[in-house]
Image (cartoon, one colour):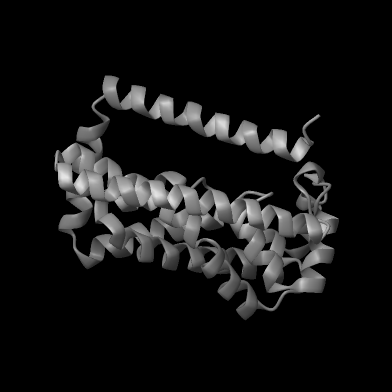
Length: 231
C-alpha cells in the first residue's frame, strides 16, 4: 500500500493537471488572451513604474496570504524571463515583511492559528536544530503553503538573515516553473515558432528539475522528522 505522503503527492499532480485543463478550456472559450494582452500592454508601457506597481501588488499579496501563482505566471507573460528576478525580489520582500509581522507584532496570534496543524511541532523542532536548511527544504517542497510559511517561520527561532537567504534560494525552482509557464503562453500567443520551441524546451527542463529537487527535499524532510503524512 502506498504511503499517505505519496498519495498526497499524486493527488497534487492530478489537481495540477485538472487545473491545466481548466485553464486551457477557459483560454479557448473566453477572450482571456485579449484580456491578458491588454493588461500586459498597459503595465509594460509604464516601464519601470509598471514593474514597481507589479512588485508592490506581489508584496501585498504575500502579506495578506493571497495565492500568488497567478501573479508569477503573469510576470512571465508580461516580462518574459525578466519576470523571474522581479518575482524573486518581490516574493522575498513580501515573505520578509510577513516574517517580521509574525515575529514582532502578532507572534501569539500567529502561533494560535498555526497550532491546529499537527506538523507545527515537528517543523519548529527541525528549524531549531537545522535552521536555514529546513526553511530552504520547505520552500522546495512546501508541506505548508508559501505565504503561510512566512508567518510560521516568524514564530520560530531562526535568525532573520538566515530566513531571507534560505527563502530566496528555496523559491527559485518553483518561481522559474511558473514564470516559464507565463513566458510559454506569451510565445505561443505571439505565434513565433522558434520562440515557442525555445521556451517550451526550457519549460520541460524546469519541470524535470522541480520534480527531482522536490523529491530530494521531501526525502531530507522525512529524515529531519517532518513528513507529508503529518500535515
